[in-house]
Amino acid sequence: MIVTNPSAFAPQSPAIDVSEARWATEELAALIGRLEADSPVALVLKHARREIASLTQQQQPARVVGPLRIAA
Image 1 (cartoon, rainbow, N blue to C red):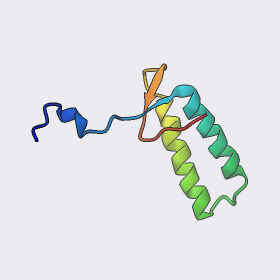
Image 2: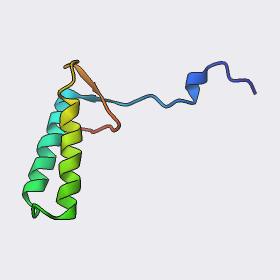
Image 3: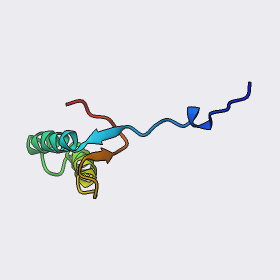
């Protein structure tokens, strides 16, 4: 079989809307607030919050491209 469309093998990068990213950042902050500051779970959530927050600071305010999709 010959594939004429090479993009068929490359998954498309899901897009995250800026409002979804802000919502996720707020939810993660609420979860972090319930945990001890030095707990391993809090550290992982803080890292995730920073990553998602960085997506909202890109130059294209309308759409944010990221590694995951969050349903609001």
